[in-house]
Image (cartoon, rainbow, N blue to C red; front, side, top):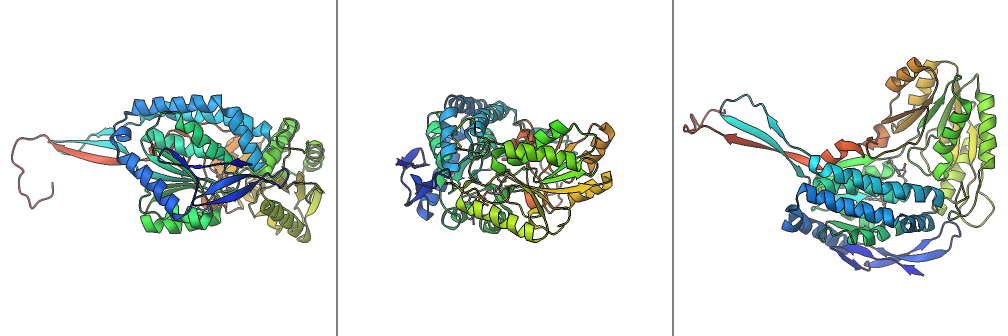
Length: 488
Ligand code: NAD
């Protein structure tokens, strides 16, 4: 059986306890994971704080940080296959997806390597004749980065990359579900040449590890990806240390198809939007909003594709739909589909777990036209489950799309350019994909609003978000300071 270790202060060690990790494809235990509790969390934060205060890291120039990040990017690219295998084994995410995604993760580190020496301060045209005022951009300090189990290497990269580029140090908490890829990533990071303690990787459970980390007085910023309920805990925890937060939460993202859309292209994008990653994606286009004029044709083609998807072992390159990560996820999907059916929704295809070993749920389409209160329309959950609504007018499409407490992603399929612009303007979401879906890049910001959280990952702003400004005032006059009782 494999055994993983945590990484604190540049040293690999066992955790205070250990827990079993199951292979979602078989349900069998395949590895033991180090469980971090109070003392491990404290050690990790102390190591990150010491590295932050050290001359070794603090004295590294921005270009030097960039070079280290470039080296890390190269190492990730060299080891992408191995990292992808660990992610697939521990989370059940299909190898077709993990191998492409992990290779691309290297590009995120390259992007932030390039940005490291472009995080500039500013000189201010101050309104006083004898003063020079400028802004320094300094790293915020120790960052607690917390990720969920899906796409862990990617979700870690969008935090660790900009944080290290800015000069911060990081305690990265892998999810307790499928932590293997990040614990393996720590081994690769260790070879890149960063000073000890710049990155620390631990894993553990919400209360004993996550809560201790996010309320720790040594933490200055919390970068969290996960569900809204956990985010509420984290914001409450941050009342202890008053750390700033960025929250990347889930979505109930609308995918709108107008009657002039290229049907084949829209169907493929919708398949990618909801069935890729077996529906375990925060940007999943989980609410199809389709024009009544093409609804039947569109659903027929979608059903055909859903039923043709190859369900199989996640480590088989041919597999398109793998198992869900945990038994708990399978139960959530099963219960929500059943409750939606009871609420009057019609199952077009799929609908219940597959009778086989592992946590398999088939691609499922639910027509909610006669069930406006179906819980699948409003509850965010991870699974290959698409809820369908339809519309007659553009205004109606927009109203349905925005009828959600979330605001992460959205998709619009139309050939009408002016309509596309109106939809872009009207959609309440952090991302709008027009005639495409689920495209990402290190260059483009990613994030949402409302129950989808706040803050952006990716892009230049993300690196700036790991800095704070220091305003420096320098008096240039040799004359004595006049009246000390008057503010100048
Ligand atoms: P989750 O919120 O249950 O857990 C996420 C992480 O938070 C885990 O590492 C967990 O151990 C930790 N945690 C749990 N309780 C904690 C506490 N009290 N204090 C501190 N940390 C705590 O999420 P999940 O079920 O693992 O993942 C699914 C969720 O993540 C979905 O809602 C999904 O939409 C969201 N997600 C969002 C994005 C995005 O970028 N917006 C990306 C992927 C996933």
